[in-house]
Length: 332
Image (tube, rainbow, N blue to C red; front, side, top):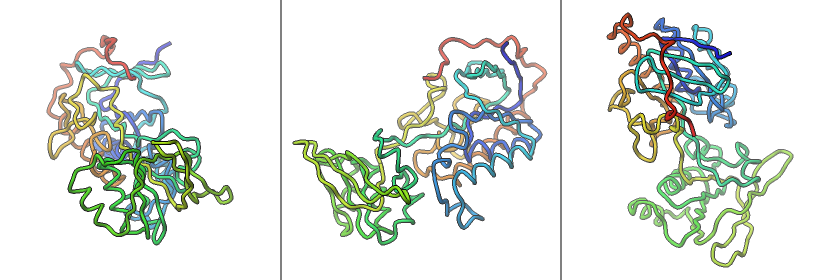
């Protein structure tokens, strides 16, 4: 039997944005429900040491997310382990259907589904994620002081990551599968001028190599895109920088998106193109993508939702039980 629930505030997605929104929403007496999604805690659950979270000199990513979830629960937020598979934002109350069969209607929605780094899909890449393989130089670059690292990619993301890593690493090797970069010319100019940077053209990452005890990267195998030949290179870390994909499948065709699928919000707020729907964190942020900025946006979203709900008379709301979900609002 389908479980039906109506809430004032529904938060879709966990991670720093979602959990912070839940804390502020609960403190505002909105009795929020947070549905965690496929990866409770988000990308920080696959991160090891975190050294840039205020108040924590060093903390493990999974531990930080456990603490944030516990904080949200302590404030009174309802945390649900489930996945929203369909979402209707066409009319209020908004309607979400979950993988378990749960059906939730909500007066307001905060989207905090995040964005995932694009990966190459190599088994060795998966093996060493968090142990020498990373997709975030600003998160992990500090750990590679005076070490040699590889950056994989040729667009703005790759060049920006490579330039950032030169602040720490003794050598940064950028590996690109073509003979020219796609990055903006000004970024290319800075890259070519940096004495710490070496570029390997017409090659792609074939394998990450490393040790098992303790688990860690020691190098990589690069494959020529011209003749298929391979060569081994030494490296202490591998940064995959081929872009990010915002998790906006639920709202495609419903909300205004930009920059490759990020939810567009009004400047200085978290308001989306539909009144009563707010978005926070990496789902909206193609620039910073940091835990602390995501948490800040989660706070903003809850405050925006509180103010918006206060302006609307819920007495005139349609019967939540009567809300039906059209076929079009289906997650990919």
